[in-house]
Length: 338
Length: 281
View 1: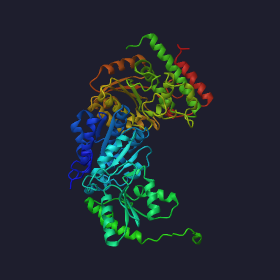
View 2: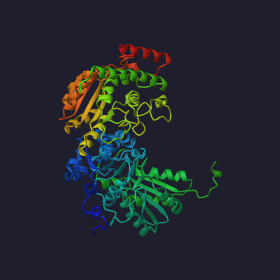
View 3: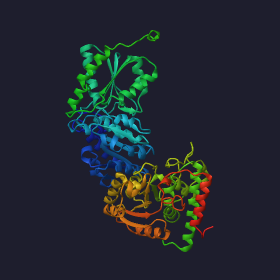
View 4: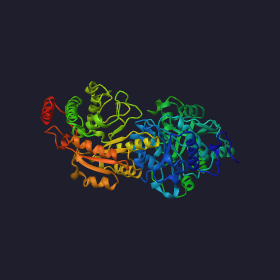
């Protein structure tokens, strides 16, 4: 079934285009109406698909070779000159190799630079640990001024790329390698930076996920409902920063059980961001974070890695069943604890 | 734009005042990067008072030339120069480095008037300058971009990433100044990390490279004129300088990369600067 929507390019052949391809395509379309947009690559124009923009606007596209630090510094200078730079490289390089340039040149000066970081999480599977970006959310989240978005699929990527133009300041969009299944059939679901999307209503617990894991969270919730009669709410927390506190607190008070899933080290990313809100609220809530354990990843196809780390449909079902068996103290008199 | 004798004297007079005020601000602030500020003073004065197309009363004038202090450790010198050039009142520098002051060790472009880029961490400014130069080209603007790089800063790999890219894109609107003061925090550059032959390195990276006495104002003007006339690619003017120039007990002493001054020592420093300018009262 073809996706439907008002902005034809955002759903342009979304079944056949990967997240990255969609991003390159959308950027090319936006470039037609916004002459300030410039594209920057570090010898990954083809891999990150920003090359699609470069093909259309060769005068507004700069390749810096395999030199990410310089690329991020140049982006700051271009923004200072009044242009709107989109910088693309693998997330592992954007968040680590060049991060001080992103932080000092772009975020410290609060410049209007958009980073499209591809191959996030374990999505570059067989490339192995050097190319698995399992620390990026934690690192970027700690940098002031920048907003952090992890779109669930290619439709949401298209929407995020458009929406980030409205933000005056740096935005980091973390996408996968591009073979992730599509979640959305339409782009008319009210995407808004900083607002979680309720993918499925539910009352027994809330599953919060981001990125490619959202697809599996929805699948798992449907199976849990059918097989176990469990009513699981699913939130697509596409914006990690600023996090949607309201949606989290609503989940705390209405479902009292929350479980997060992410393709990232379980430390510092989505789960940590959600956990901080819960802990500071003072409300009782059974809570589990599921991500990659604090260790380096093996080689393998992304689907095998997701299965191994229990962030695919089967893993989510297993972890949710575990959480439902988890006891937590409901009475408020804890005197017997001392 | 060769320098007339009168102009030369005027610029030296300004440089003398700036050197003394760098000493003052260093004393008031409790400590600052004085050595590298004194080494860059002469070419910075030539740039700010003779070459840069700027309007200090309209610091965001779009057509202005941009100067990026890539060697951000020259913050105190840059701040004194900007104040003297009319960007802001020198009085604010009495609170240099203090909580709430817009001016401190490494200048913040969002707060410090006339500062084009926040620098301080080494190896960042040249890339930002390159971005501004590429921006000028993309926007069909005439402004030029000047980047002041430190010699120790040339240890940073990112400097050479930017050098490669500036040549690749043939940035004729980008002129670099390299403050070759031969000293870094841990000692002489050649003992900490060898840089020589530095001019050959920049040449090999495709930059039109000149090596001059960085305290000789007429020579600085000649070099800038040549760089301005060269539009086929980026230019680098390596200014051979003395760290701490003008203050005898600081000259060539890496201990004065950063330091504080007592009132007594500040007076001694200013007396030494007076000796550097016997013809200027």
